[in-house]
Amino acid sequence: MGMTITEKILAAHAGLERVEPGQLINARIDLALGNDITAPPAIKEFKALGVKKVFDSERIALVPDHFTPAKDIKSAEQAKVLREFASEQGITNYFEIGRMGIEHCLLPEQGLVGPGDLVIGADSHTCTYGALGAFATGIGSTDLAAAIATGECWFKVPETIHFRYHGNLKPWVRGKDLILYTIGQIGVDGARYMSMEFSGEAIEALSMDSRFAMANMAIEAGGKNGIFHVDEKTLDYIKGRLKRDYKIFQSDPDANYAKVYDIDVNNIGPQVALPHLPENTKSVYELGDIKIDQVVIGSCTNGRMEDLRVAAEILKGQKIHPEVRVIIIPGTQQIYAEAMAEGLINIFIEAGAVVSTPTCGPCLGGHMGILAKGERALATTNRNFVGRMGHPESEVYLAGPAVAAASSVKGRIAAPEEVVK
Amino acid sequence: MIIQGKTHTFGNDIDTDVIIPARYLNTFDPKELALHCMEDADPNFAKQVKPGDIIVAGKNFGCGSSREHAPIAIKAAGVSAVIAGSFARIFYRNAINIGLPILESPEAAKSIEAGDEIKIDVDKGEIVNLTKGETYRAASFPPFMQEIIAAGGLMPYVARRVRQSV
Ligand code: SF4
Image 1 (cartoon, each protein chain N blue to C red):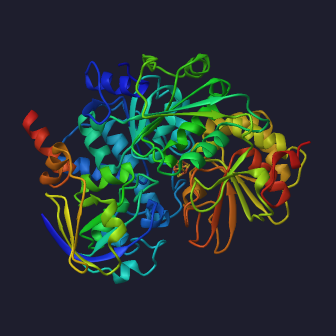
Image 2: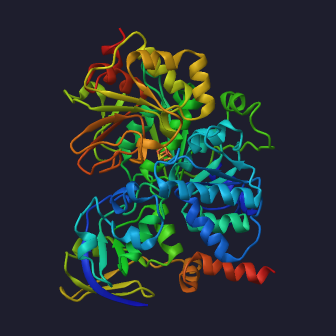
Image 3: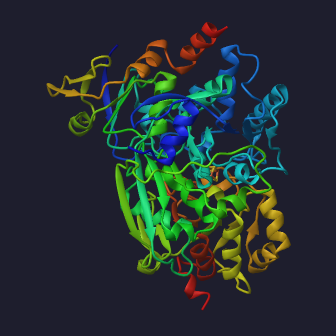
């Protein structure tokens, strides 16, 4: 019996010939990530352990991105814990304000993750890096503390669900729409504890940015990781970025899958997830008149160049609806600079949007765009749970950047074709 | 380990954002987190919960963010155990790592009602509903996880291994 890409990466890092779903293993990690919310408790536990040095000062990434630039005194204190720990331990991958970005946009961009890697992060969207053919998964602060001390982490080898996407994508449909559609089909626990493997000709046609958006939301189906196979686009992406050796793993033709889904993309329109779960998806064409107060374009799901380009294509020469506030957040400083060089930032400002420095900000209801009671937002983020973006009685609808931009103009959730003919 | 207490019930897909909203994550002090435990699911929970009480919920409890602040808030609020139809993966790990007893039992999740007095034998994976006179089975932990639980969480377990290796 063959193995899946996920099983092969786990086996290689556990020093085993092969692994089986359900098996408990101890594996070596290539990179461990923490942010300004999750790293401070981990650092406290690490110190309590009495170990003097982290396992490898070059294989830890600390990114203060959630409440930064610090939104209040307590947040400033938490960010300070990261800064001091990084300097004390000589951690090379600490990213200061002004040179940072949202962690899951930043780490691949900076070449810190490569194919075949095993990455853990004290953030549930660590699964984003599966777009590069790596095994990447979210863990908590205690796991992070143990990992930075030992360089290892225990795992239960997951079963894998194989999602194969066939056909041609409709105009405006990208990775975000495919993953929202998929979560709508299987539910928010449809892949609980499992690996989600994505393939098929429609996937091959997706850009890397779209693949990141898809892998990012594997956790929204309960998945342990989301993973893609390495192709020319992956190799192009890592070229000039990745400084380490890497290894390409492939699923065997006779690998064992718990389930296989064949999804025809020909009829999938741009998707919207209604409150308060990402599984409440509908095609934008099926929605009635849903007025909105705020639009957020950004986050670790859709804060990359492709997303900003799509938004700009729709917003160019348009004016944002007078009753709507639009907040656009490039994922990293590099993306911000690139968007500026391409003239996208000007398009956004002329349309009447605000453009923010990279931060998680409103995505988790942190700062920079919190919703008041009864307000409704359409966001390119990944979660629409109760209270996610502010008041417990506010609402978040999820969509890709094309629907977000069109809705900004219309003042209600709108299809891209309503603005761009 | 035997745990006994009164239950508070919640539905399916209780996410970590409602267990502890991000607006309180500028601290990780367990006492402060406890004040807002379950706030966006039930604003009165933190006020009403008594030490030893037990949370019972439907499927996929703890889905969403990896914030360990969620099980920490529950534990610090005095909750002695969480029973659910199923748990989201990261929450499950985090709860074991910080020593919050959790039990997966779809039948218990379905049958237990708010206010029922229940008794849990964690080692045996047995849940007795004293109010209704019913007994439910819970999934047992693999031996490796039992070792972590017996050590009092992941850090004491790792500490022992680190000491052994020097
Ligand atoms: S952008 Fe949102 S989902 Fe992504 S890491 Fe930040 S808070 Fe989490």
